[in-house]
Length: 239
Length: 329
Image 1 (tube, each protein chain N blue to C red):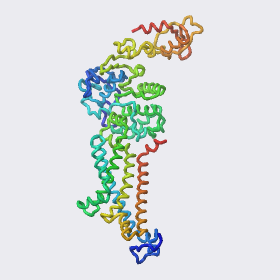
Image 2: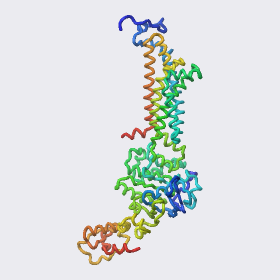
Image 3: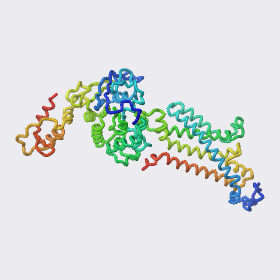
Image 4: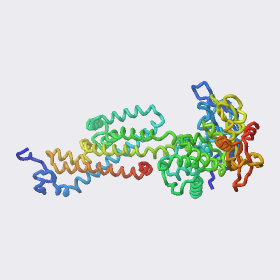
């Protein structure tokens, strides 16, 4: 742990401070200097990658859960496919897709969507299955049509489970999307890879990694807030 | 006004079962067998019987939650087969034992579900909800509460008025008070009868409790296993002359006493109040004959002095008089 630090290749060396040239743990001046040019764009790209993946993943998983809610026998195959996608190591999945879709954002999104499916499908279906039978019976008896029962009764009652799934999926995707820079140079993975390739430039590594963690925490908190707003009845139940 | 009127919306409608049979696939015995009965408009018909007698099935045939195989059911002379099942259901109030309130909707929104489906104007829905909330003894503030914030009795009250909301001509009630404690059940039965006076609907009410059937029914249909109608008549007539051993056993050995519970002292002829024994117990004209008899037995008295609301003596009741009443057809 003693001796001189290993030589570090530092970007924008010319204007670098002493902190940066020493590769200290964290240099606020570097972050400030590179916020607009590197970190902020990477953060926004990361957010976009995540939103697209979760949104498309949710549409697919929701549609599958709506089908599985009535046709019990499709639950198993859907779960199996989701589980398979979920268990493939992310780097491997990215590589597997490259021959088909190249080193593109499409490749990244397909893989990320794949990781959301199992979580979102299972949670949404669990939400549907938790709707009490007597509520459905009353709804049918009162003359609600199938579609009205789905949108007015089942979806609202499944919302707590759906939102729980969205929280897990979002945080998972934010974390996984950093690896995506391996395929397509964007998102917070990009500065992280660059820091590692620069023989571990600590400030950039910590700044980008920290941003990914912060993004995950904020996204989770935001979804909790949304959940509270859309399910006021569930909150009062606890009193 | 809403231009889309639900099938059968309005005051009350006659329901006719003619030779209705329902078989469930894979079962040899019929669930309902050749059932024919007429429920006059505005009356409460209680379907009662042991489990497996098909009473719930018979009820669910009316709003087509279950479809029958043979025969026909008409509401106000129209075969329910001719109507769209969804439109039919929107014109029929439906109450179940588990209540089935929508947990994500407030009390007011629960009550407003069917009127909204029928496209009632907002103002009319608001007024109807307010009216029903008051009718059933809930406070105006309860309208904005969620079902989970209510007691069991309050929830069933909401279930009851939710079914009444769109002014259906027909109500179907499947053991609505079965899950309540005896005191709450008794109170809700009384409220239901009071509500029935105000909002007169044709009611088909399912229960396995013969006492509830006697208390609530204008007519009672006693079903036996295999969905066969054993007897269909007014409570007093069934208690006075059961059609067969099955009915006699079902209504119970105390059917005489149950009959006495149906009538109040104000409804019978009393003996003239000559020579009142000074120590005879007193009771009011509103007492049921059964309770009056019980009073005589507990007090060890041969006679009871009956007084009217102002405290004046209205007449005398003797044990002999009570047994003569039971001998009447």
